[in-house]
Amino acid sequence: MTGDDRARASNGSTALTRTPRNRLDQPKAPRRRLLPEYDPEAFGRFSERIARFLGTGRFIVWMTLIIIVWVAWNIFAPAHLRFDEYPFIFLTLMLSLQASYAAPLILLAQNRQDDRDRVTHEQDRKQNERSIADTEYLTREIAALRMGLGEVATRDWIRSELEDLVKDLDDRRALLSAESDEDR
Image (cartoon, rainbow, N blue to C red; front, side, top):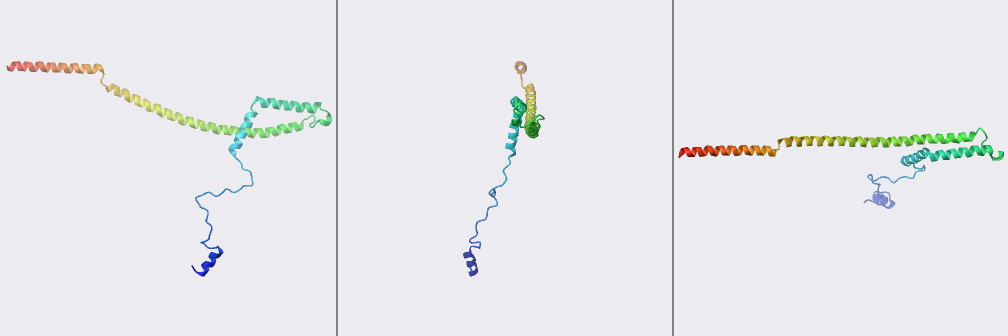
């Protein structure tokens, strides 16, 4: 080590005292984000819950009660307590605001349901293909077994073959005994 190297080493600026580098095979530590995180799955589940609620009788009843109370309050309440006079423009604005949020949430829920239906349809199609392939395989195996059974000896066939063999043996014995009688 030269004097120049020792001077650098004492300053801490050389490779001898360098801090270890981050490894390339490990992910970087996540940086803190200033904006809130957006989880599309959580938002989708939320929109489905809203859409599911909007499609219930409970929602219709509550909405009807709120509108009746709103209109009744603004017609029958003392004039200084009314907050939305007869044309009910504020009520119209609130209903429009609700509709402007409800429609996209319902569409989002429908899109998610379409995605689930598509996945289910694909799984059903694959299951049907497997079932058809299994059925075709079993059909071929049954056909092979039937053909094999056609070649299997039945009891009647074995009996007739044995009877033929016994008859042939009897004929040979008779022939041999006739030849041996002639030789004597």
